[in-house]
Image (cartoon, rainbow, N blue to C red; front, top):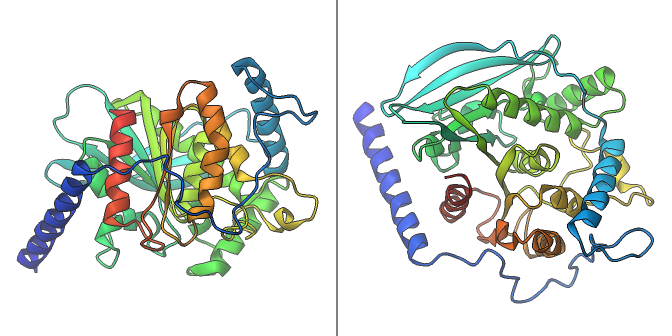
Length: 364
């Protein structure tokens, strides 16, 4: 069995290496619009225009507009606690996996509320290292999947294992919707019960506020590690994790580079109205917020959107197109990108090659 697993891993690594070689020979343009725009291409309100119709032409004007956008979103999502509880970090089981270690870690989010996950650290590295937080998708394997602990989990999506081998310290936290104690083993009923818990604890919060605050606490934890360069922290997420990878850098400037894969960036693109995300209010006729505003809060830091013609597709270009003028205002147009691999709702080999190159360029 060990010999078979080694052969399988070697073959998988060879195939990935071939994909990366092909990618290196022909890198895709990350700001190329679709050749043909869909008929239902979103028409988004311009970001560089005030409610009164005044055009925004300076960074100072934009910073004022940015604060208003942020305040509007926090008023809807819920304000984060001003004072954070101590992490009370517990470093538990540790495995030596050759060139790196994997450690089970637990820390406090709020008083009496803990999360856990898996920390990867390269061995024998010199100096401070860049770090990436991996937000997992909605799989019953949760953080254990991306951390490479579940044999049934697709090897292509084990970002924790992949990124540590590129020299990153990697933190794979568990999303709160997988908290135990709901009486449900997994699935939408479990996620719903956990979202209902949050609403009881924080009546003004959406579940997305909790996910975003968890991402803020993840940055707190990563920053606390002696091996990490605090100025080089990034994040990546697929599906559920992609949504967090959009909101995390929008509300925490410590995330310098982010990759959001197939989360469905538009509020109508996927199930943002679920109770474990933003809730049904986003479908109200008078609801005026949209995620191009959230994306604009990330500027001028690096952000990459990965589409696969599923949750994200050519319509997603509208959100990149909308945020580009903000990036141009900072002189950082090159920090925003997108790539549609057209391979469905998955983190494909092509998507991985683009994502890893993007993170390397902005964090190394």
